[in-house]
Length: 318
Image (cartoon, rainbow, N blue to C red; front, top):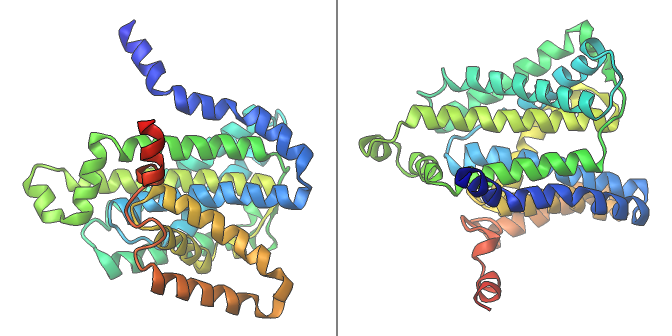
């Protein structure tokens, strides 16, 4: 009984955030037009991608450039599951099953790519993961069962509510993991792998966990993306998409979950704000990123979380 009460108490905040989906969904559906609501959903999807990659790149220190591949796998497996394996119509259960299928497929791929690449580090690991992402994209491009070069149309079943719930679960669970005693082991692998192994940390195990969990949530984000826009094509999961996610992690601050979320929100909204100068949008966008990295080379929050800010400490003290 005491264990159940303790479990409920530890997850009370997470449950409360999930329950907020109803009032937030009603409020945003009434207050925002479909264009702004779409941007909010994209912020949620990009936030999941940035936080999941942050576990691999920022927390564990393994430089991966294959996140778009995991996202593509989740998107296409989820879409194929909805079309071929779920004859009951896409409701809440159908969407949940499709997202789970996509996430599990991406996690299996993360496990497969993580195991043989554990001997690689830095640039070599980045090249291998980049090649893995491109292999997935080319295989999908030549698979007629999932549309091939034509792309794949599926029922648009994802909404703000489903994206919000998945984003809260992704951030909440990874936050709990990273800030638990096991999270220290992930950071130890990042700081000095040899020293961590000498202290008894199973570095192989933690690197595989980071790859698998990061790939799982990237797959779920891909499934949400596919079921939100209703049409997917491999052009959405190119090398540039992986770079975009890496930029979110670096800009937010490697190792900071809240920083990755802030950067994902900023880099989702910024291109839309710059539409007034469509011809020069990418130039302005690039210049802003360069200025940001020159003035804040460690990223927006560095390795800190937003809860460590002095403002939050003062509020807690009161």
